[in-house]
Image 1 (cartoon, rainbow, N blue to C red):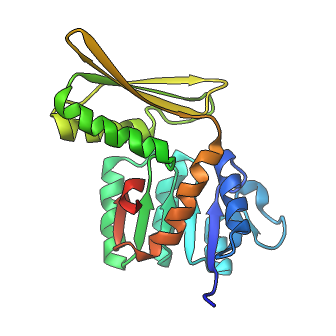
Image 2: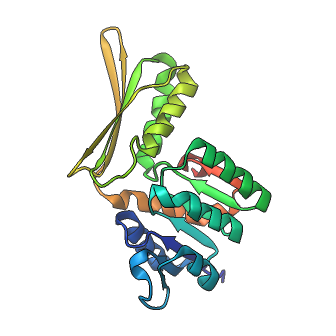
Image 3: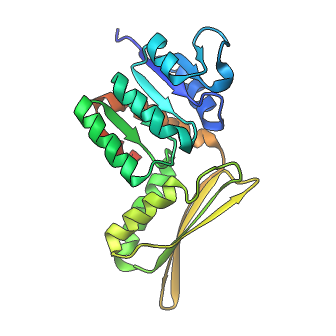
Length: 235
């Protein structure tokens, strides 16, 4: 029988991180070895206030990060330095930081995975938008998130704009909404003479992200060293 993979979750008290930690804990092929959040310092076995302590003591085989944009670069650097494969759901890395992180991970032989969005319908939205952009280059992106989301535009919107630009040669404008009552929605609106096309993804619950995160946890160690971007790389 194959031993369960030891997983640490940074941001384990957050809206998504808590769901991910609980799902890992319930999965028979995974073992939750550490929940990490500032409020969990001195909270008992398997709970840590600092990522560095969790890596040193719990020795995870995979690290998952759902923290904050201002923490992700430092957390990723810690994972690379410790040789721990990392699944990132936290947005906020600049293009330059991604390049630096990719280079460091390649040098150390560590696989890293980042998904702008872990929901399957979001992956399909971006894929369909890329196909539409070939014939309909005029489009704009509208992303809607909860008022608590710290970064704007979202990582999903930026990734969508990258994909559409690669397909059409034009980078679409992005419009960001932050309002109470929203979870995570995005529309890509295309226009042509006498017609429009809207490709839309709606998230009604953060549980939508969990299956994609579990897939990444199970697959990240098989990825090449360096940074792999996008859930579609695993599908």
